[in-house]
Amino acid sequence: MTAAQTRLSFSQNVARMVDKAMPHLDVEIPPGLAEQIKACDKVFQTQFPVQMDDGSYRTFTGWRAVHNEHRLPTKGGIRYAIHVNQDEVVALAALMTYKCAIVDVPYGGSKGGLIIDPKEHSEAEMERVTRRFARELIEAGYISPAANVPAPDMGTGGREMGWIADQYRILRPNDIDHFGCVTGKPVSSGGIRGRVEATGRGVQFVIREFFRHPEDVKLSGLAGELEGQRVVIQGLGNVGYHAAKFLSEEDGAKITCIIEWDGALVDDAGLNVEDVRQHINEQGGVKGYSKAKYIEDGHSCLELDCDILIPAALESQITSDNAANIKAKLIVEAANGPVTFEADQILVEAGKVVLPDAFVNAGGVTVSYFEWIKNITHIRFGRMTRRHEEFRGQRMVEALEMLTGQTLPDEYRKDLTNGVGELDLVRSGLDDTMRNAYQEISRVYHSNDSVNDFRTAAFISALQKIARTSMEMGF
Ligand code: GLU
Image 1 (tube, helix red, strand yellow):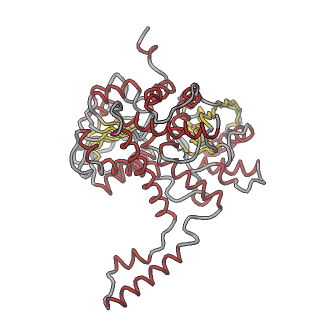
Image 2: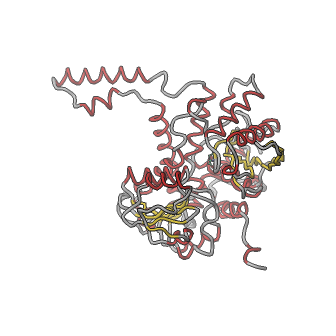
């Protein structure tokens, strides 16, 4: 048998990671429950024709997998890519179940995928394809505010989510919660402030929390603060761009390498993320960027000497082929499934700390949860309280000034008299969520002698919650 034949598929990789955690649960589970948790509940496949701008027809193939319905609705993005396949969608749906459990977002896991290259199509074609795919999913019961709520993923964004929301409203005009049928919508069409940056922001909050845990920093072999750490990032899409931007601009980390599909840029002094992003937007890739060294074999740059490696692009980037060459001490999985099961073992044995995808990139679904709550409550966060808080703050300032006979410095006055708005609340809720989850994972890791990696600790935390709910509610 060749190496390629023995390679695990994406969904088998995820299942192996779950198997590794299962024996460590602090709750006794009945025979058969472990299998039920791992199994994908259902997969819907559809093939449908759409007319192209030139009058011809093209047939598209798409899927929506529902992995686990221990909580409803189920949640997860819709991916548009040429390489999407059923196994990938099933694996990603499973990761959604574990992801939601890790960050205490009360959803089951789902995922969708459509074989399409968005770059090949006009906006009008994309709209027709998206509306038709949405119609198939709505009619089959795979989109609704109560049962299954999609969101953006690779190749999709606010534009597609807006079309899906509108399509649902057309087909279900009597559903008062229609906006809650999909998240990641434009803010002016039922979306929430802070959703676009949410996954990258969550990655930043995770790394900040890691550096607040000196025992974990020591474990990785790193030292000191986040400021000045050398970061290699793969993928400057929505997640990678925001993570790299916030880490460099707000925390003083140095982005020493950015890897993209057409090569990599390297600068030991630190790259200007905004500048590189602009170049990519204009040129379609990093090639031709003149202010840093360009390396054509971008993939090899995963092995560069650095402190933190953030794979924020595709799955299966670190495999048994290159894992032993990785120099970073901390690997932060911003993408879904960037490290294979076998590669993970190699990294952990080499003493690296790997913060797992199902936790690290959960910021997106966390803010999706906030958006869905906003949609089904039909009110923007902070709308009832903002002015009231401002009034209370103003009175506090007056009282302080009256009692002390002094004028409060402007910076304090501003903080006290500013009512909190939607974006502040979203960021605060996201920070709290990521920090709590980190603390729980770290606690499980340190309190269990036979667990030697953070991924297993994260899966233990998730599986315990899912098993308890399944036993309480029946499965
Ligand atoms: N596609 C994102 C993920 O993989 C977001 C899912 C969501 O917001 O439902 O986590």
